Amino acid sequence: MIRTLRNNWWLLAMAGLLDAIISAIYFIMQETNGPVAFHSWNTTVELLGKLALAAGACSIAAGVWRSAAGPCWLLVLNGLGLGALGLIQYQFTHRPISFLTIALLVVLMAVSLGLLDLAIARAWRRERHPADGWLLALAGAASAGFALVFLALGLRWIRMDPRSHPDLLWLGCYFGFTAICTLWLTLRLHSHGLPPLGNPRFAH
Image (cartoon, one colour):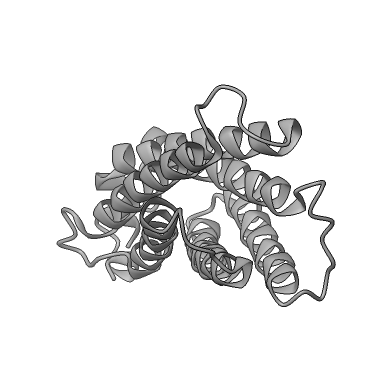
């Protein structure tokens, strides 16, 4: 799994950069009560859909391309959830979309990415890099926290004031967090060979 990610680190970096752009757009929409630098609300949502589709494609490709040692199915699952979110935003702009649908897709993305972070963290701690391992474990725990928040929002356990657009705020926070974690992971994977490529314990 980790060998596959190391081989495709640049695809992972592209996904992280796209997540950062998505986060920025959500924050712009939330702070201005609507689009400022875009022609219309629907156009902005369609743009988000295209960016999410591209980020999802990068994540899936990073999980399966050059995966002789085995694909990274958690990353593929994350990419599928992100791609589904992008497809909904791009294709169904003129139809009402339940926030529960969006929230459940974010829960899928957050859980899959959190489990991936925890799996890599455990491997890195075994390879005598505890600092990187513990930081990634904290990121995995934070992803689980985001999953719980979006589940609560989607099921309306937490009430939202539509005038303040808390859904956009939380989406911006989640994608910003994901971008930071993904880009940091990319740098660590690219900067050193962790774990060793010849170690059979992490070949699957």
